[in-house]
Image (cartoon, rainbow, N blue to C red; front, side, top):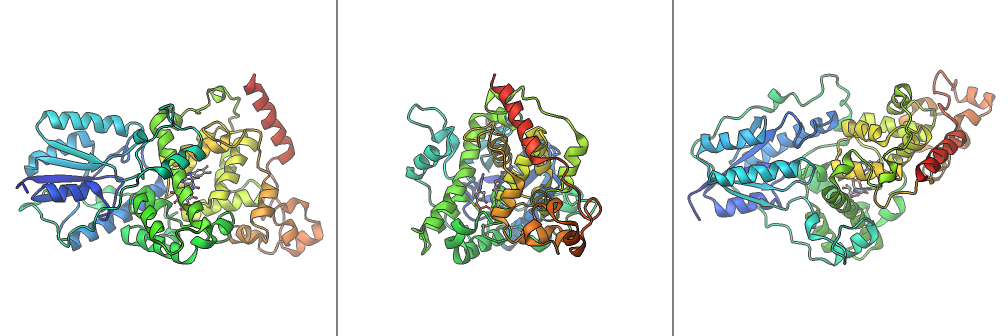
Length: 476
Ligand SMILES: Cc1cc2nc3c(=O)[nH]c(=O)nc-3n(C[C@H](O)[C@H](O)[C@H](O)COP(=O)(O)OP(=O)(O)OC[C@H]3O[C@@H](n4cnc5c(N)ncnc54)[C@H](O)[C@@H]3O)c2cc1C
């Protein structure tokens, strides 16, 4: 081993286990300096949303503790990585930089430039894959072009070799004789000034150890019923690993191999779960090959779609005051916990895009700000799926009926009652359409529509037709 000192640049890989950049740096160098750079523009090119900032704060705190237990540290710096990294190399005398690749637009270009600049200055730069089962440039269809449909994508990917996770890192890391100065997490003020995050800790504990615990618990308790339960938002039927995966507190390879080693490895439900992890891979595949889709629809015919503009309508949706209980419950769950169940994400998305005819980009932006798992790839895929304008999307003419969706996936109204206490006493028959409830029953349920809970802001049937008419125009 050389006597070289190296920087390990952490980004969306806030973990020590199965971290290939870290493992390689530890193998090839005498000592390492772990670094995290907070760009004022976020980790990449878009400012982080409020909920992501909350998660990042706690995840970094947890990484700092894990590194301290290894007799190491995490050096925090704020600013442009293109300036900070050369500066840190100079300050410390380090001669190499290691990182795991990211795939968001802007991030790839920035990293390429940085790699070239550093190499031109004689610095060794090594980048590795720490975020995906297979990187997008290694997956193509028979014609050698990117996949645009999920099923063949996943069928193909499932036949490819998936690397095993890295062996566990050593008990202690070799450190430099002098540590460079570090800013503090408190300096960065990542936590919100208004305490809208006060209930987040009831639901989440960011950090690598808790990501591993969430996976173990899910595999032990819920995976065999995943297929049956995953669409019912009142149940805790899914893994809730998404923010841990987004921040790289756990790797998809760790999930993949833990599933293969599980006693239920052949269970169809476990296969369904892995295919959902596959949707995340597909999202990155699309983002990498079609980076413009974060702003523009993949299907060009939707570019000139006649969207409406209405700030009051958008605000009613954001605040969970549309008058459609399943939509409002979802939006209130999002605000209170930084997360929303996947089935409900589809329902609230369809409501915004189709019933309100507001641009999918507005929904994407709200999710970006409020989700703890906000992710450029999965959020873009989700919104273009909902809008019917992306790859392998729901057809535009399929407009979710929020009443039927509620009746089907929240049959007892348990989810709605949990998030809309005003409807706690509503009879089950009317819980998804309170405006149809006879006045005497409404009075008994102590609900005055328009006061305790809003009247529906639009008529589903009329707005469904409006969406279909707009779609017919687009087809021309
Ligand atoms: C409009 C819309 C926006 C979305 N925005 C995001 C987002 O910003 N970040 C995000 O991680 N997911 C997003 N999703 C996908 C999905 O809703 C979440 O990944 C899922 O709800 C997370 O819960 P879980 O971890 O319990 O999932 P599980 O059902 O346990 O699935 C396991 C993992 O697979 C991945 N996954 C599951 N479903 C999907 C999917 N449809 N697309 C991509 N990956 C998936 C996630 O990483 C998830 O953690 C969005 C979906 C929609 C419809």
